[in-house]
Every structure is written in structure tokens, then in C-alpha cells.
Image 1: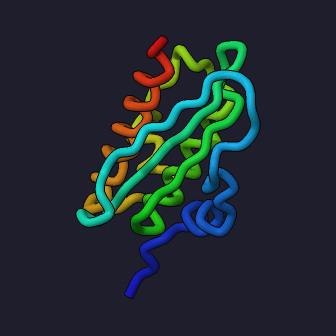
Image 2 (image 1 turned 60 degrees about the horizontal axis):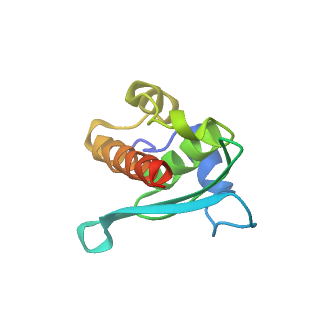
Length: 125
């Protein structure tokens, strides 16, 4: 049987530094949750924005190692970015970086939905 996880998935899964509660104070703190544990996967993203940038971006997720690794990958790439320009990463980038099997591409849609929902919350007054 071939290994379903590449080195990037293994490394990200072993160091889920963004899998935690949102810390600190100040700025705008928002959270967005998508998916359902009962359906197999759930993602909650939380962010703190100050001075127009994401000063912290964290997640809580329930699902397979690919989902958790993809959440960690996105948090690492997006933390520090402009809060007003927050957008999902290109699916091709995630598929290649994580060697994501085609049957796991729904994982990306869940993360994409979470990022879009988080962006909407950041836009609220």
C-alpha cells in the first residue's frame, strides 16, 4: 500500500502551530465555522486584525490529516496578509504542495468556505 501523505503533510501535521485558540487582545477579533463533525469535517478559523493586517490567524479543525495540514498551510501563508484582501489560496497550489488525492479535494472547498466566511466577518462594522 502506498503512503497517502507526502513529506509536506507529515511536517505540517507534526507542527500544527496555528491549531489553537486566538490569543492576545486589541484589534478586531472574528471567527467563522463551516462544516459539521457529523458529516466528517469541520473547520473554524479565527483571526485578529490590527492596522489592516492579520496579526494572528488560527484554526480548530476536525477531520483527516490532509484537512489539518491544509489548514496549517493556509494559516502560515495568510497570517500577516492584508485583512481587506484576504482570499482563499489557489486550489492548484494546495493540491501540489500537499499532494492531495482527488478524493480529498472537498477538503479544499471547506477551507475556502471558511476563509470566505472569515473575510465577510472582517468586513462587518
